[in-house]
Image 1 (cartoon, rainbow, N blue to C red):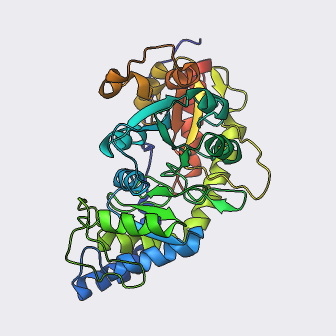
Image 2: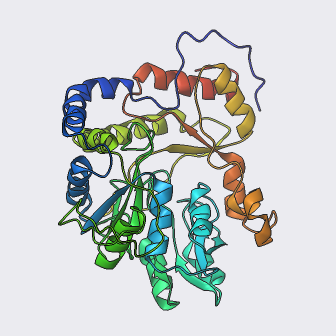
Length: 395
C-alpha cells in the first residue's frame, strides 16, 4: 500500500449524486406537468398517477403498474398480494438493502437468507437450492447495481421446489433479460423512484409491476386502506367498503408528474450511464489496490443491464473512502453490514462466516459517482484521487 500524500485543495466537490443540470433542462416540461396537478386540485391518487401508470406499463411491457409511495411499500404490498402468511419463509439475498428483508417481516413472513454470486452480487441459484426449507413459500431475488440476477436459473429452482417467485427489482428500471423487463419473471416485481435511482422522483415513490391481474387488484386495494373496487380501467373510482386491512400508500400526483416528465429522457440517461461506466473502466483498469471492476455476465437472449451504480471492490476500502472524502469526492458503501449481521435480524441466529461471498463484498465494495450530470473533469478528479491513494501520485 502506498503512503498517502498530503491533502490538496479541492476547488469543487464531486457529489455522489446530482441531478441539478438535467433537472434544469427538463424544467419546462416538469413545470407544465406540475401545474396540471395544481390546476386539477387532486394531489394524491389522482389523474397524474393514472397517466404515469399507463406510461410505466408502456415502458416496461407489464400488464399492470400500480403507483405507491415508496419502493419499500411496494415490496410489502407485493408480498401480501401474493398471499404470504404469518411466519412463512421468503428466501432473499443476504447482500442487499435492508428493505429487501425488512419488507418480509412487515408483511408477516420470515426472511431466509441466501448467499450471492460474487460476480453479479445477486442471489446464487445453487445457494438458493440449499437454503430451501419446508417453511419456504416465496423466493425474492434482488437485481443490484448494473445487471439482473440469473432469472432462468432462479426460476427453475423456484418451479422445482414449488416456490412463488417475486422480484426486488427496485434498482432495475430498464434492465431486461430474455426480452422481459425486470420484475416480470414471476408474479410481480417492484420499482423504486427514490431521487438517486436511474429514474428518480423528488422524494419517495415506487410501483408494483405485474402481469397477474389478481396481484394488481389486491395491491390497488392494499395501497388505499384495503378498499377493493379500484381497477386501472375505472381509476380513481373506488368502493367505500374495506375488504382487507391495508395501508395509506398512495402515490402523490406531483411525484407522478415529475416522473412522467423525466421518463422522456430515461433512455438517453441510460446510454450516458453506460458511457461513463466505460470511461471508468478504462481509467481504473490498471490501478493497484482495485480488486475488481464491474463485470457483466453475458446472458442468452435479449438481455440489457443498466448502470445504476458503478461498484468496485478495493483493498483498504474504509481508508480509501476517507481519502476520497478529503478530496471532495462522494462515495457510497454497499453494504457495510450484510443482512444476516444486522441487529434487527439477530433472532434468526446467524453469525459471521455463514455467507462468505456477501461478507467479502461488504468489506471491499464501494460505489463511485455515476449519474448523467457527471462532468468529464469531475470523473478525472475521482480517478486521480483513487490512483493517488494506491500509488502516491494522481497520474
